[in-house]
Picture 1 (cartoon, rainbow, N blue to C red):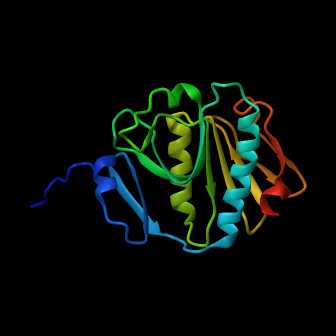
Picture 2: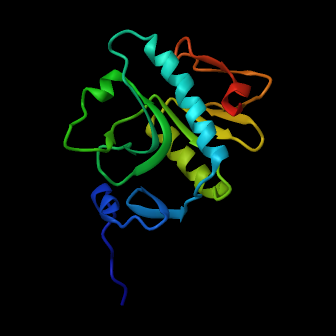
Length: 187
């Protein structure tokens, strides 16, 4: 006799112990992987990218949203059955206005989600995350590969594009005016 289990929620996820696992939920199902610890390439790429985003952010008008990084928790759907820790994100002002000081998870869609590859990143897990980000309506997803010094750019309904260390990474219509040489992310 099988027993039906309840779908996992963000509240359940947050109650789990910190034990070296990176966890997220998709449609109420737990996903997890071992975290890469003390990876200077991952950390440097994330720091350089968020620095560049910060420069762009400072040039925006007063209502400029927020940049988050370092495993910021994001709940993409109204129900709390899908949530992720993301390496970095830009959350637009209209989403930030809906946030509560009592809840640390970002509720709503960032304009940009960034994943930085680590040696422990599994392709099928990454593909599932990207699919869910795009399916949920995130307009721009960047996957940074410190090893190959590339960025893969995803947008809903479009084929992925790539930018290498000899090219510029731009924010297009999602982050107007954002542009950085990809090489700068790996200096």
